[in-house]
Image 1 (tube, protein in one colour):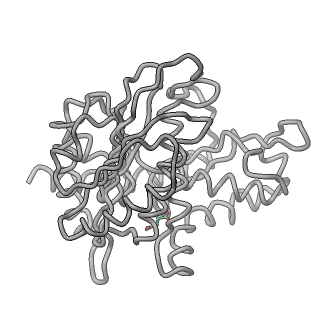
Image 2 (image 1 turned 90 degrees about the vertical axis):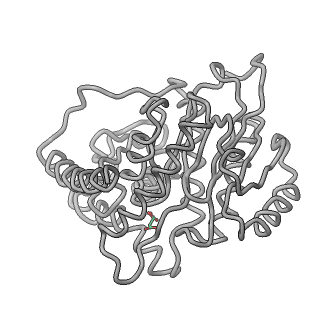
Length: 336
Ligand code: LMR
């Protein structure tokens, strides 16, 4: 795909409060600033920040995705000395296509002419906090970021929202950026997808790249529905349906789903910190696929006419109703 294409620098803005990716290389004059907001106040630790920066820079600069990048890191003023350290480390990584790293605390610099924005940070849930308090704080954050995207970023910018509650934060950012097509906004459920692929792969004793067409429906929360009814597993060179490959319907309809739904909480329980490396990897997978397109299509589209059985329908309805409730609460705050 890339041979013969003239490569422009891709400005990537990483803001410590948000995240996201997408588009076809050929239609883009990429100066893609990735927005990677990372701050001590966010629910991402410094380790996650470093992982994300490295993964994003390294993935997009990999030989299979030769996209030059200008990486913009936006954070609050007290964090600028920390960002200087991140800049030094990025320089020390000697990434061949990372053309420039710009640390800044200025929104007009951070969001200017962005091609891709990765909105990482959000208000984490703290002890004694109700879900509504969390939504209220995040509506304020993502309203501001959406408005900044609207004002300064390219209209083609691809926005990935990572900060939780990611789906609802993404909606708020999109609604606050009316001049940017809503199709350009997405939130991170690739982590759930990767978790699901990996669980199925381990069960079948194959590597994760042998599992495809896994779907995550709904909210990035414990109501999400990892669906493998349309998934295929490559077993010794032949593709078979996931249910046939796994040969354990009870597991696929039980522990598999709850393991993926609860994985984020399990990581937090074990590490005493939110997922970092796997989240960073998922962000890179997501942004790379949105930006370059999937291997077959080089773009994305909605798949119509998928058969949905009663089991799946019930799970999809449950997570959809949680999303609707979150949306309604958030939109109430947005209108205040
Ligand atoms: C994850 O899925 O690992 C995270 O979204 C969990 C969290 O609440 O930070």
